[in-house]
Length: 133
Image 1 (cartoon, helix red, strand yellow):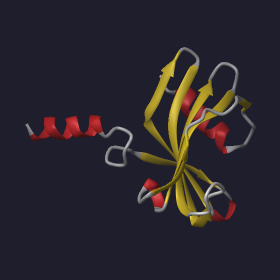
Image 2 (cartoon, helix red, strand yellow):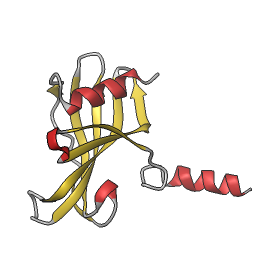
Image 3 (cartoon, one colour):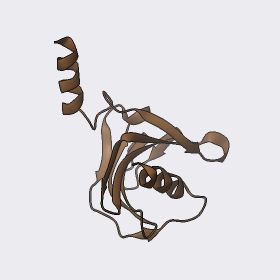
Image 4 (spheres, one colour):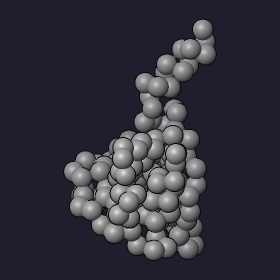
């Protein structure tokens, strides 16, 4: 019974940190920015795939919209696996690391499609999202 209750709570909180399993997918030179993906959020429909990713910043950054400091950012991307393109669907900036703390800024307007740039974090994420069966 306890297992059932925990599973139910996990399903209800699927996009929260309670169930997220962030796997490091890279970092920039100097470790200023570390990238993570949650493979459990990969959803594929035809040649399009959606996935949540997270970026941790070694030092606080200022939001371009309101100037509030943030340490991490969760992003939902859509990838075109066939045509090698991506677009940002949503962004949430958090006061703490790993998507914890208050949300200090957000954006939920889908961006325009852009090509996957070789050797970029988007290429890494595209590869992860589009290889899931």
